[in-house]
Length: 334
Image 1 (cartoon, rainbow, N blue to C red):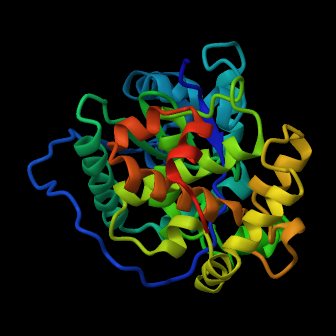
Image 2: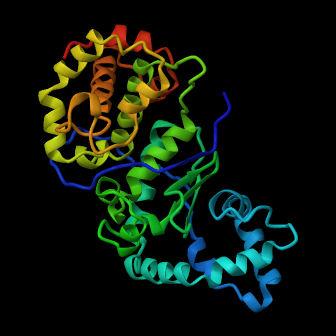
């Protein structure tokens, strides 16, 4: 199955919580050739009075990403087409975009802490997947479009989607509070880890199109994130407050029994599946005290039991697409 372009928004609520740290791999000798480029700075430094020459230099330096930025992110179309330079100038001189650029510069005066965390994340990834290449990481301003974009070779981060939950722009856009809470700088590594995992190990919905498959797939993604971000709290990994995690622990069995009794697990009803796996302030069928995507907790617990019973590697886990097999070998009993 070909790896797909991933463009998505990871809904993760910002909160702190404690977790028991497990023994982590020694990565001090892992080399990654990690590269991070600030396209957001380079783009806004172009000479708009000499836009063709300046843009040609950007095309040469950023290659595939420049095309992706024009086609998929700011959506001005083919960067080589007639009129593309005028459209790019319109973006660069837009009043609101420039206000956003100033806000981004103030929040990310020093990007080195995020760069270091991302590099460490990819060193863990290289430890588990030594044959896989590390993507080039690029920061940009999207005009409040995608948070993270990935291809097989690139990982892009839209810095204007991480300006803080109280950012005036987000309120002007009418974004609900449960979404704004994830739009903070601290979320960058988590969104990147999730986006990269989904790109490298996509959900094969042509053979796995029931709720159980989606639940276990989400559990795989969470487990992957915990391996490449081993020292981070569960609240940030799961995208839930500590209180919501406690709710999942308390009602884990009740959630599982409910799914079984309602015969939801093997349902392929797309709209019903969305109610359980899409980001929301709460999971409607579990009540308004539940967190959104509460089933991801079940998925992770199934994966943990599966790992404990089989001792398979992370590589083997991420390639496994037989979710009935995973459930059977997990012997999951909440």
